[in-house]
Length: 310
Image (cartoon, rainbow, N blue to C red; front, top):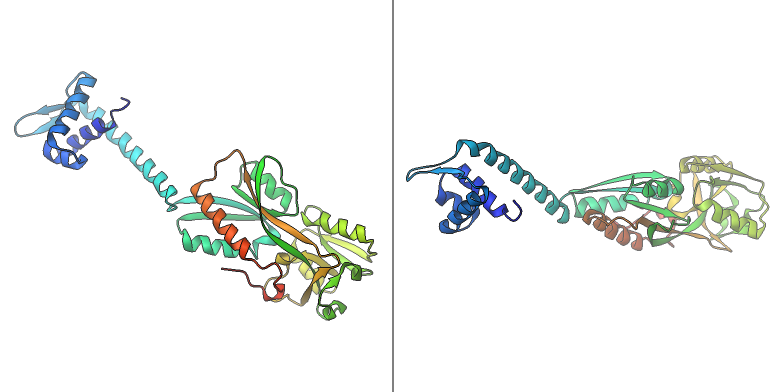
C-alpha cells in the first residue's frame, strides 16, 4: 500500500467517527476530497470497507480486523515519529560519556550542570576510568564520547582538543616547596615522587621529562587512584606531579601545590568520538557545552581556588 498513507488515515478516521463530515474534519480536508480517498482505497483493495446508508456508516464485518490493524500500525508510526521529533528538538536523548578519573571531579560537574539546565530531557551518563579503558569503551561502542588527555588517539576516532592542563607539584603542608612560586623540575632531586600508574596517559610524559632532566629521585611510588595519591602526599610520604584538574578538590586536605617550571609541562585534554558513527542531536548538544566549558577553563588559574565556569 505504498503511497496510500492518507487513504489509510482517512479510513481509520471514518471507522472511529462513523460519519463522513466528522472524519473529513479530523483529517483536515473537505468532505468531497475525503470521499474520494475512501473510494480510491476501496478500489485498490477490490472490496468495500464500509456499509453506507443515509443515516449511518459502519465498517463491513470482514473489514473490522483490517481497519483495527491499520489503526495500530499508524498509531505506532506516529509514536515513533514523535519520538524522533523530540530527539531532534532535544526534548529527549541519551549520551554516554567516558572520562578520565582525573577530569571527572573538576571538569564534568560544570558540563553536567549546563546540560541539565539547557536540555533537561537529555539523559547524560558519565563513567570515569583510565585513558586506555576510556578509549577502548568508545571503540567498542559502549560510549558516545571519551574525554582523555596525554594519550595518542587511534585513527578510527575523530578528536578535538579542548584545553591545556598544566602540571603542578603537590606536596604536604610545611614542605620546602611552599616557599616557591613555581617548582623547577630539578628541585625534585632527592624527593620521593608519587605518580599515577603506567595505565594513566600522563605517566609517560612525566617519566620522559624526568629522564631528560636526569633528576635523581629518592624513590618512585605509583598508584592507580587519585584519592590514593592525594592521601599519600598529605601523609608526607612524598610529592606528586599532577595536572591542575587532578589536584585535590576544595582546599587540598593538608596539601599545597605550585606550578611545575623549567620545564613547564601540560597535558592536552581532548574529546573523541567514532568516525563511523553520526553524532546524534543530543550528542551535538553535549559537545557544544563541553567545548564551551573546556574553553572557559583558565589553565593558569591557581588550582587552590578550585573554580570552574558554570
